[in-house]
Length: 176
Image 1 (cartoon, rainbow, N blue to C red):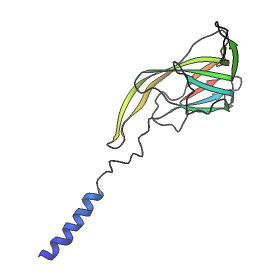
Image 2 (image 1 turned 120 degrees about the vertical axis):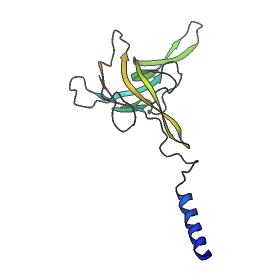
Image 3 (image 1 turned 90 degrees about the vertical axis):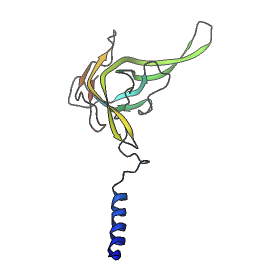
């Protein structure tokens, strides 16, 4: 009888450890990025690159790291804030460095190009992924708010998918 207990005990041990989840490996734990595609305002079915495109978060001094700086691009993926319900960006077309003199006579470099300010509003949904990954944020009820200026290079915004739960398809179309 004891001969049967040992193989059964070994088999049960392997089965029980095989069912455990690894605690130190996180594969599916990334908060999705907001995917934006740029289109031609005169032909809304055609993608149109933004020349020398730069994107900077409102209140930030550096460019968004998920987008190549001053590149010609028709598609970008950007992060939204996970602790707030609004994220603002400066979308800069034809970005360049412009040297100017400040009030103290010092030469300073400022941003040149066409700058539009765009805010994305949303509701955050915290989603538990696993013990290893913890929580990620998804976003629902996405809306865009373009600050109207005298000469916006962005002509229109269309929210294609108001639920941001992956980074595989476009959520927003921007026409310029």
